[in-house]
Length: 124
Image 1 (cartoon, rainbow, N blue to C red):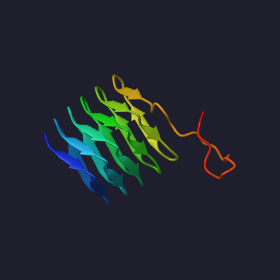
Image 2: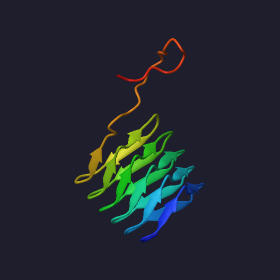
Image 3: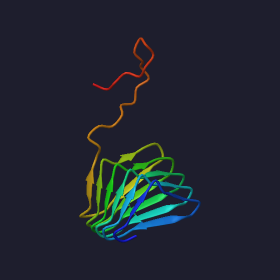
């Protein structure tokens, strides 16, 4: 999509979504061999990847707050930007030369401790 916006979309079972110049994909779920491509001036926000899914950010593309889990892969190539991305158990990130990678400002702490009321302990 060029210049359009897709919100809450799914790319699963080998499906794919291409976000090109001026396009915006908001909160996309990519799973089971699905692919999302973010091309020149495209923006993908809140993408969730799982089950051998791929998110590819090419020159000029930007991925914000993507989460790669359970065998999913995030590829950020020359001129691409990934910001606030989390790679969880089984996830994989490939960041090439001249790509920009910025980790999340806050990532959840791994902790088994609980407060007396039983709610999870907030990271300090």
